Image (cartoon, rainbow, N blue to C red; front, side, top):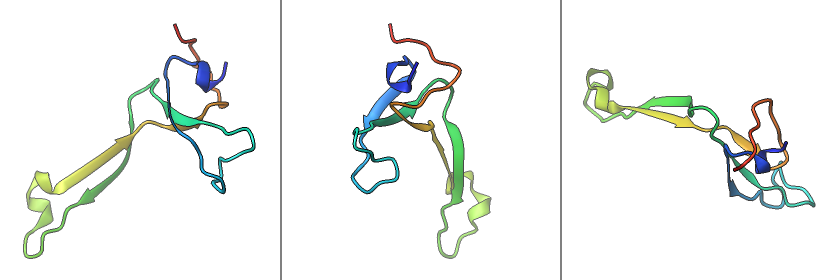
Length: 81
């Protein structure tokens, strides 16, 4: 019942040697797509001489799916088809 065997997991990266998640067993990382991406930040795109709040196009939002490792697990596991 590990992430690597779950239908919601999208394995897409390998930790580099020296990274916090690196191990002798070459853990693979990925994203859990069980739920929608989570809002992580918003920033205003500042243009000199203009009021950034006056135009909604000046606001940049960012969301991301949670990063997990192939050997992680959770209570919402569903096996791949």
